[in-house]
Image (cartoon, rainbow, N blue to C red):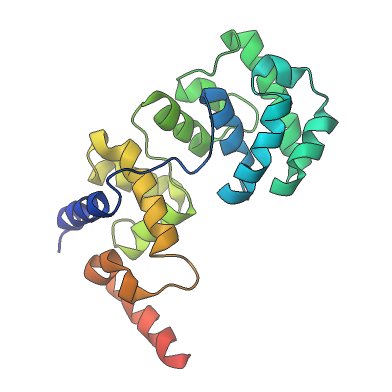
Length: 220
């Protein structure tokens, strides 16, 4: 099966499983999404979704966030980890949104990446999910699956993103990257992986990955 054929199989299979796909991080607008994605670094969406209601009850826009002390933000977001760094980033990026963008989150990748605590992946998530700008943010699930499916070398997320953008139609990027994330969580996790339930990898998976899977299965 060629990579184009594999990509077509992924698209059709995911469309059947996830005709509608929710955004994992709960938010109300571009600003609350930006903060939620920033908080998700080295944390889980579940933990972030448990934490953001407490933070947004205090401040859900740049102006009110700047009114909080960094230590107050840090105390609220402790459960997500890296709270000192994230609290400083949230406070400073809120100041910069007021100074540079009239308090609005810009729908521009470079402008977002210029904000503290906002890397390429975070910026890509925001422009795709908040503004509908085509982007293909790559998280650990997508990076893992693209390698397992033989659609990318899997060496780094930068290369994985390039491969995904080349293989999949731009019109599908915003929905497809979410579908792959959900599929990775439900059917193709890093741990507790059951190939019998994973129709995509079972059908198009990299041979070396399948051999490794069955070898580990035999030793258990």
